[in-house]
Image 1 (tube, rainbow, N blue to C red):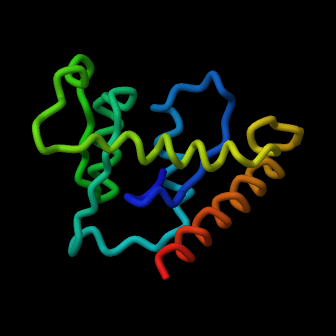
Image 2: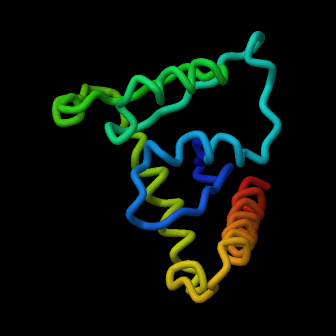
Length: 134
């Protein structure tokens, strides 16, 4: 999970063969940034068609998010004039994370060690984004 600038906000570690839907709650639970009160500010959460399930939508609504989920079959016809695709931000963040060789090729046997390296790399990315904004 990342913000609009590409800064990583939450990380969940699982096997490569796990479906995105099954990691939705784990990712939201690992969010390290304090969220505003959902009764005051409704945050938007943009997801692709891999999350087009009723239980994912309900879980996001319960947690106070305004859900924007592409339906299956809708994504090919979604291009509208004047609207930018938001997918590239996530792909860019993945590219930044893949520059860390220790993350790209998993050498650690324990998931805790791998998650610590993910958090360290995410912190470096956020630090670089903040440095660019100055």
